[in-house]
Amino acid sequence: MLNTIKVLIIAVMLLSCGKALPVLDGIDSEKWKADRDACQGYRQSVAAAMKSELVKLKGLSEMDVIRLLGKPDENELYKRNQKFYSFFITPGSQLPGC
Image (cartoon, rainbow, N blue to C red; front, side, top):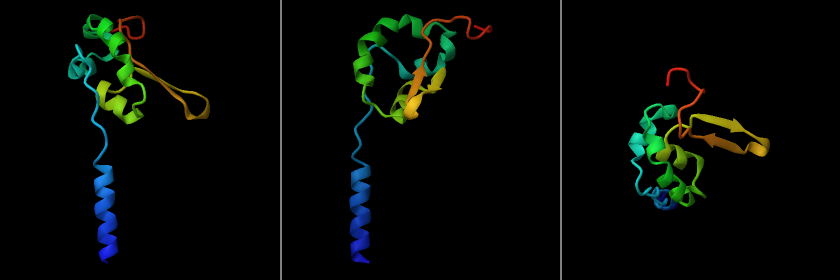
């Protein structure tokens, strides 16, 4: 019983030690998420800032990217379970309602 409690405490400690999401300078994550398909123009206005912050996104897990940038506008499953996420920067022909 005591060993089980020790194992649970250690597991909780290890799971709670995840690193925090990076802060993207010049980009409001909530506004980015709200600008689905780039229809509102926010993403285009911060495109240069996003380009300079891309290095912070490398190495993040799939769920961390979604927490930071929201659900992707498009995604594609490739060989060996590789996933490609697309976030539109400019409105285009992808949605006629933009």
